[in-house]
Length: 232
Ligand code: CA
Image (cartoon, rainbow, N blue to C red; front, side, top):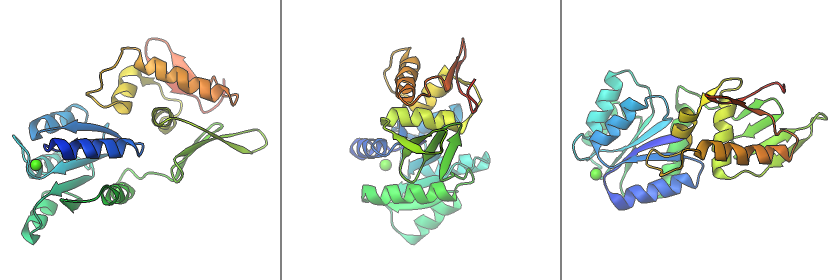
Protein backbone atom coordinates (compact mmCIF):
# COMPACT_ATOMS: atom_id res chain seq x y z
CA UNK A 1 0.00 0.00 0.00
CA UNK A 2 1.05 3.56 -0.59
CA UNK A 3 1.82 6.08 2.14
CA UNK A 4 2.32 9.82 1.84
CA UNK A 5 5.09 11.14 4.07
CA UNK A 6 5.32 14.91 4.59
CA UNK A 7 8.51 15.63 6.55
CA UNK A 8 11.04 18.41 6.04
CA UNK A 9 13.95 16.92 8.04
CA UNK A 10 16.04 15.17 5.34
CA UNK A 11 17.64 12.58 7.63
CA UNK A 12 14.44 11.57 9.35
CA UNK A 13 12.49 11.51 6.09
CA UNK A 14 15.08 9.27 4.45
CA UNK A 15 15.10 6.86 7.40
CA UNK A 16 11.31 6.60 7.43
CA UNK A 17 11.11 6.11 3.66
CA UNK A 18 13.78 3.40 3.70
CA UNK A 19 12.34 1.56 6.71
CA UNK A 20 8.82 1.55 5.35
CA UNK A 21 9.91 0.35 1.93
CA UNK A 22 11.50 -2.67 3.65
CA UNK A 23 8.03 -3.49 4.97
CA UNK A 24 6.09 -3.65 1.68
CA UNK A 25 5.00 -0.02 1.81
CA UNK A 26 5.52 2.39 -1.08
CA UNK A 27 6.28 5.91 0.16
CA UNK A 28 5.85 9.24 -1.62
CA UNK A 29 7.92 11.73 0.34
CA UNK A 30 7.13 15.46 0.17
CA UNK A 31 9.62 17.76 1.89
CA UNK A 32 7.36 20.73 2.53
CA UNK A 33 3.70 21.31 3.28
CA UNK A 34 2.84 22.82 -0.10
CA UNK A 35 4.26 19.90 -2.09
CA UNK A 36 2.58 17.45 0.31
CA UNK A 37 -0.76 19.18 -0.16
CA UNK A 38 -0.34 19.06 -3.96
CA UNK A 39 0.43 15.31 -3.83
CA UNK A 40 -2.76 14.80 -1.83
CA UNK A 41 -5.09 16.79 -4.03
CA UNK A 42 -3.60 15.40 -7.25
CA UNK A 43 -3.89 11.76 -6.14
CA UNK A 44 -6.55 11.73 -3.42
CA UNK A 45 -7.28 8.01 -3.65
CA UNK A 46 -3.88 6.37 -4.04
CA UNK A 47 -2.77 6.82 -0.44
CA UNK A 48 -3.85 4.45 2.33
CA UNK A 49 -2.29 6.60 5.05
CA UNK A 50 -0.46 9.90 5.59
CA UNK A 51 2.39 10.59 8.01
CA UNK A 52 2.57 14.35 8.49
CA UNK A 53 5.06 16.41 10.48
CA UNK A 54 3.57 19.24 12.54
CA UNK A 55 6.18 21.93 11.80
CA UNK A 56 6.61 22.21 8.02
CA UNK A 57 7.71 24.98 5.67
CA UNK A 58 4.95 26.72 3.64
CA UNK A 59 1.89 24.84 4.95
CA UNK A 60 1.90 23.40 8.48
CA UNK A 61 0.92 19.80 9.23
CA UNK A 62 -2.04 21.01 11.28
CA UNK A 63 -3.27 23.13 8.37
CA UNK A 64 -3.04 20.10 6.04
CA UNK A 65 -5.09 18.04 8.52
CA UNK A 66 -7.71 20.78 8.75
CA UNK A 67 -7.95 21.11 4.97
CA UNK A 68 -8.28 17.35 4.51
CA UNK A 69 -11.00 17.02 7.09
CA UNK A 70 -12.79 20.12 5.77
CA UNK A 71 -12.81 18.35 2.39
CA UNK A 72 -14.26 15.22 4.04
CA UNK A 73 -11.19 13.11 3.27
CA UNK A 74 -11.11 10.14 5.63
CA UNK A 75 -7.46 9.25 4.96
CA UNK A 76 -5.90 8.10 8.27
CA UNK A 77 -3.34 10.64 9.50
CA UNK A 78 -0.43 10.06 11.87
CA UNK A 79 1.08 13.35 13.08
CA UNK A 80 4.77 13.62 13.95
CA UNK A 81 6.00 16.30 16.26
CA UNK A 82 8.71 17.36 18.63
CA UNK A 83 6.08 18.96 20.83
CA UNK A 84 4.87 16.89 23.70
CA UNK A 85 2.69 19.27 25.64
CA UNK A 86 -0.84 18.12 26.21
CA UNK A 87 -2.51 21.16 24.60
CA UNK A 88 -0.57 20.53 21.36
CA UNK A 89 -1.78 16.96 21.23
CA UNK A 90 -5.34 18.16 21.67
CA UNK A 91 -4.89 20.74 18.90
CA UNK A 92 -3.56 18.01 16.60
CA UNK A 93 -6.38 15.61 17.34
CA UNK A 94 -8.97 18.38 17.02
CA UNK A 95 -7.57 19.25 13.60
CA UNK A 96 -8.33 15.72 12.44
CA UNK A 97 -5.20 13.67 13.13
CA UNK A 98 -5.94 10.06 14.08
CA UNK A 99 -2.81 9.42 16.06
CA UNK A 100 0.25 11.19 17.32
CA UNK A 101 3.91 10.26 17.59
CA UNK A 102 6.39 12.42 19.51
CA UNK A 103 9.96 12.72 18.20
CA UNK A 104 12.32 11.03 18.69
CA UNK A 105 10.68 7.65 18.14
CA UNK A 106 11.82 4.20 17.06
CA UNK A 107 10.88 2.73 13.67
CA UNK A 108 9.28 -0.28 15.38
CA UNK A 109 6.88 2.07 17.16
CA UNK A 110 6.10 3.90 13.91
CA UNK A 111 5.37 0.59 12.16
CA UNK A 112 3.13 -0.55 15.02
CA UNK A 113 1.18 2.73 14.93
CA UNK A 114 0.72 2.42 11.16
CA UNK A 115 -0.60 -1.13 11.47
CA UNK A 116 -3.02 -0.05 14.20
CA UNK A 117 -4.22 2.96 12.19
CA UNK A 118 -4.74 0.86 9.12
CA UNK A 119 -6.76 -1.70 11.05
CA UNK A 120 -9.03 1.05 12.34
CA UNK A 121 -9.35 2.74 8.96
CA UNK A 122 -12.76 2.86 7.26
CA UNK A 123 -11.25 1.04 4.30
CA UNK A 124 -10.91 -2.13 6.31
CA UNK A 125 -8.02 -4.32 5.25
CA UNK A 126 -8.95 -7.98 5.15
CA UNK A 127 -6.59 -10.65 6.51
CA UNK A 128 -6.36 -12.17 3.08
CA UNK A 129 -7.37 -11.76 -0.55
CA UNK A 130 -8.34 -14.61 -2.81
CA UNK A 131 -8.75 -14.39 -6.58
CA UNK A 132 -9.01 -17.54 -8.66
CA UNK A 133 -6.13 -19.83 -7.67
CA UNK A 134 -4.26 -17.08 -5.85
CA UNK A 135 -4.40 -16.33 -2.13
CA UNK A 136 -2.58 -13.39 -0.57
CA UNK A 137 -2.03 -13.68 3.18
CA UNK A 138 -1.41 -10.32 4.91
CA UNK A 139 -0.39 -12.03 8.17
CA UNK A 140 2.69 -13.53 6.52
CA UNK A 141 3.04 -11.13 3.58
CA UNK A 142 2.94 -14.23 1.38
CA UNK A 143 1.11 -15.36 -1.76
CA UNK A 144 0.01 -18.95 -2.37
CA UNK A 145 -1.19 -20.83 -5.42
CA UNK A 146 -4.03 -23.24 -4.74
CA UNK A 147 -4.03 -26.31 -6.98
CA UNK A 148 -7.08 -28.30 -8.08
CA UNK A 149 -6.69 -30.61 -5.07
CA UNK A 150 -6.89 -27.58 -2.75
CA UNK A 151 -3.22 -27.75 -1.77
CA UNK A 152 -1.28 -24.53 -1.44
CA UNK A 153 2.23 -23.67 -2.56
CA UNK A 154 3.96 -20.49 -1.56
CA UNK A 155 5.27 -18.26 -4.38
CA UNK A 156 8.47 -16.38 -3.56
CA UNK A 157 7.90 -12.79 -4.69
CA UNK A 158 10.05 -9.68 -4.51
CA UNK A 159 8.59 -6.63 -2.73
CA UNK A 160 7.61 -5.02 -6.06
CA UNK A 161 6.05 -8.24 -7.40
CA UNK A 162 4.07 -8.56 -4.17
CA UNK A 163 2.82 -4.96 -4.36
CA UNK A 164 1.84 -5.37 -8.00
CA UNK A 165 -0.02 -8.63 -7.42
CA UNK A 166 -1.71 -7.15 -4.33
CA UNK A 167 -2.97 -4.19 -6.37
CA UNK A 168 -4.31 -6.49 -9.11
CA UNK A 169 -5.92 -8.79 -6.52
CA UNK A 170 -7.64 -5.83 -4.88
CA UNK A 171 -9.36 -5.16 -8.23
CA UNK A 172 -10.17 -8.56 -9.77
CA UNK A 173 -11.60 -8.52 -13.31
CA UNK A 174 -10.94 -4.80 -13.49
CA UNK A 175 -8.58 -3.21 -16.00
CA UNK A 176 -5.92 -1.12 -14.28
CA UNK A 177 -4.16 1.36 -16.53
CA UNK A 178 -0.39 1.71 -16.86
CA UNK A 179 -0.61 5.07 -15.06
CA UNK A 180 -2.69 3.71 -12.20
CA UNK A 181 -0.24 0.87 -11.66
CA UNK A 182 2.77 3.12 -11.93
CA UNK A 183 1.37 5.70 -9.48
CA UNK A 184 0.46 3.05 -6.98
CA UNK A 185 3.56 0.83 -7.11
CA UNK A 186 6.34 3.37 -7.50
CA UNK A 187 7.08 6.53 -5.56
CA UNK A 188 6.34 9.69 -7.58
CA UNK A 189 9.98 10.73 -7.66
CA UNK A 190 11.18 7.38 -9.05
CA UNK A 191 13.26 7.85 -12.18
CA UNK A 192 11.98 5.11 -14.38
CA UNK A 193 11.78 3.91 -17.94
CA UNK A 194 8.43 4.22 -19.70
CA UNK A 195 8.12 0.44 -19.89
CA UNK A 196 8.63 -0.08 -16.14
CA UNK A 197 5.10 -1.42 -15.64
CA UNK A 198 5.33 -3.84 -18.57
CA UNK A 199 8.72 -5.07 -17.34
CA UNK A 200 7.39 -5.71 -13.84
CA UNK A 201 4.31 -7.51 -15.20
CA UNK A 202 6.62 -9.72 -17.26
CA UNK A 203 8.59 -10.72 -14.16
CA UNK A 204 5.43 -11.44 -12.20
CA UNK A 205 3.94 -13.53 -15.02
CA UNK A 206 7.14 -15.56 -15.19
CA UNK A 207 6.85 -16.40 -11.48
CA UNK A 208 3.18 -17.29 -11.87
CA UNK A 209 3.96 -19.40 -14.94
CA UNK A 210 6.20 -21.64 -12.82
CA UNK A 211 2.98 -22.63 -11.03
CA UNK A 212 0.86 -22.94 -14.17
CA UNK A 213 -0.79 -19.51 -13.75
CA UNK A 214 1.15 -17.59 -16.38
CA UNK A 215 -1.99 -16.33 -18.11
CA UNK A 216 -3.88 -15.15 -14.99
CA UNK A 217 -2.91 -11.56 -15.82
CA UNK A 218 -4.40 -10.46 -19.11
CA UNK A 219 -3.00 -7.62 -21.23
CA UNK A 220 -5.70 -5.17 -22.29
CA UNK A 221 -4.14 -3.58 -25.36
CA UNK A 222 -3.80 0.17 -25.17
CA UNK A 223 -5.09 0.33 -21.56
CA UNK A 224 -3.29 -1.88 -19.08
CA UNK A 225 -3.75 -5.17 -17.29
CA UNK A 226 -6.47 -7.22 -15.67
CA UNK A 227 -6.31 -10.11 -13.24
CA UNK A 228 -9.06 -12.55 -14.14
CA UNK A 229 -10.86 -14.35 -11.34
CA UNK A 230 -11.76 -17.16 -13.74
CA UNK A 231 -9.18 -18.54 -16.17
CA UNK A 232 -10.15 -17.78 -19.74
CA1 CA B 1 9.59 19.76 10.75
